[in-house]
Length: 172
Image: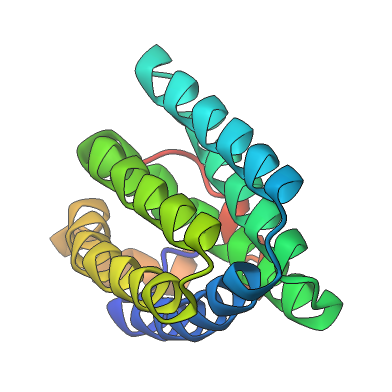
């Protein structure tokens, strides 16, 4: 099993920050009342999943929320790239969802409001800011996974394909 290094997590979150900022800006520009209603439904499903305590369901809801934002943005290439990054971020989100789930979904609510208001700058800024908060949590999550014996064991770990980080089991 490949445990992402701090550097890998940082790089992934850097890309996520760029993509999500652009996606949120385009979504705020293109949002219709129907699209905002769909985004609110995705947000509510995320809150319901979070309140249930089901981390797997919360992670899936987070991916669905970001997929709706990408759909609203209307850029198929950006949506495809965001999907790739989203699959890789699932591992990270699974680690931090129990600790910062309420904060994350509050940030999502702010993003919904910015998109609904058509405030491109605010939507982009919000989307770029919360991956940075998540990066601090990711460093903590990776540290929790690694033990002193990991350095010795790393050479024996099975390397997963780079786009299958989402396939990793939950943290111990």
